[in-house]
Amino acid sequence: MEAAMPEAVAAGAERDLICRWVQIWIQDCNEFRRWEREELVLKRPSPQTVAEHGKRSQLFILTARFLQGLMADTGYSAREMRAEVDGKVRQLEEMWDMIHNPMSDQEAGALLQKAFPDGPGVGGVA
Image 1 (cartoon, rainbow, N blue to C red):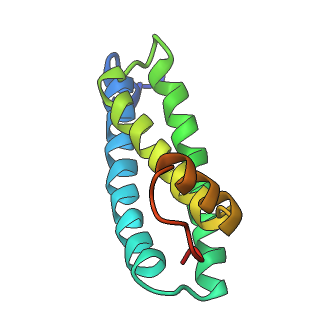
Image 2: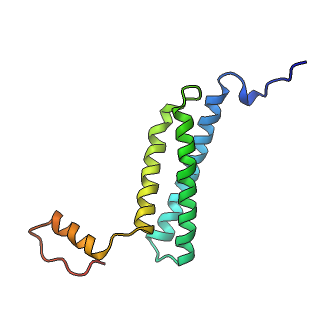
Image 3: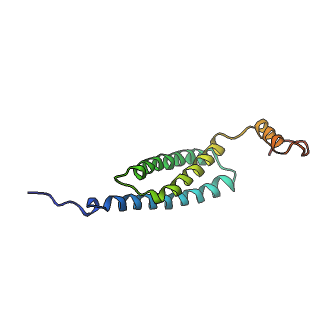
C-alpha cells in the first residue's frame, strides 16, 4: 500500500513552497527594517536594543543564505525572487556593519578629505 503524497510536495509544489517562504521572509525582513530604522537610526539605542539588533539581523542574513541556496538549486528554482533577496541581504549586512562595526572618527575624516579635497578642514565627526 502506498502512502498518498501530501499536496505540499506534489509535482511543481516545491517551487510554490519556496516562493511562499521567500515572500514571508521578505515581509518579515521589511518589518524588521522598519523596526531597525525606528529604534536604531531615529533614536539613540540602548545596549540591549543594539544586542537584539545583532541577533535578529544575523538570523535574517542566515535564513536568507538558506533561501538563496534553495533558489539557486535547479530542482527548486524560484530565481525571479533572487534579486530582491540579494538586495535585502546587502542592506542587512551594511546596516549590521554600520551599527556593530562603526567607522572611527579618523577613518571618517580621511574619507571626507579624500572625497572633498578642496573642502574646508574636517572638524570633529559627529
